[in-house]
Amino acid sequence: MQPQQLAISQTYTGGQMYAVGLYNIFGGYAIGKVWADKDHPDAKDIHFPIGTVVMKVLFTDVPTDQMPSLVNPLIWNAYVTENYISQKRVFKKMALVQMDLMVRDDRAPHGWVFGNYQYNGKTNHKNMWKNLVPLGIQWGNDPENNDGTWGEFTNPVPAITRRNPNLKETIINPDVEELPPTHLGWNGRLNGPADNYLSSCMSCHMTAQAPAKSPMSPLFFPTAQIPKVASKEWMKWFQNLNCGERFDADKPTSSTDFSLQLAASLQNFFNWRNAGSKMLADRYKQNQKRNADPEQEYEIRRARDPRDQ
Image (cartoon, rainbow, N blue to C red; front, side):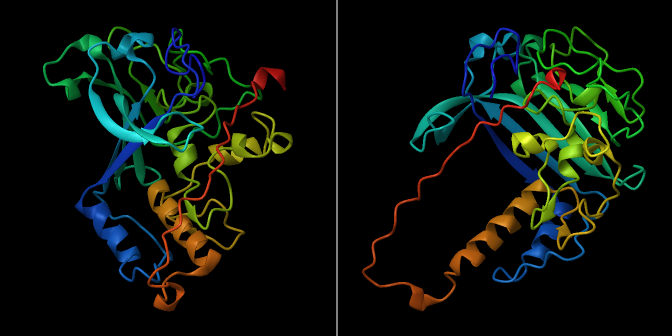
């Protein structure tokens, strides 16, 4: 996490975000169908039924005194890595920052509605969960909203919230007293404070596929391959896809219907299986010691400032 990503006063570097996702009974049923045979998950023709609700709460270890909105914080004690590049796990105090929602609704033009809430402890509710204030909703990527630049409403540093009145498929909370200053997504599209200011909720989630064939954001390509902001290739991530449509229709992959969690679970399974399945008992020895977790390399992706392009 970059300095000033969550607040203009944030100087802490290497901060972490941890999330917990929850699916209601309709979403759980769809996931259960995929994993009915745990050894052979079925990734074909995944569609979440009408009425599916997905909720994700996000917590950070950035010191709360660096974020005015995290006064009176809601804290969970979590067993997490001590910092972004460490493998050592410790108990740390994590503060609630945002909550994301996805709702499968047949009234939505493309099948899904996204919502976002941001924590504002200054509202000072006795029930701290009520300190989550509405940030906005989104039901499309506004693919026509492209002036060929990085966008005057793009806001990498959240000194203020830049609302774009020209968007037709995003609505942002207009109450400047209720909603703390925050960056949004590219050119004002919906995104939460923990998310990338050059993306959007729907932009990320519509790339959900198994196996993955494209990154969640064009910014996740190697630096030399990142398309220019607002270019034709860039706008691939800001098209409108319907529920169940594949982001990479020309590649051998299956849509997971906007569910990045389901996509990640399948991708992890495929990677494990392709690396050498451990499903057979004869791969184990009775006295074999359990191997330590392999070392993992963490790369902090620093998006290029589009003004430099």
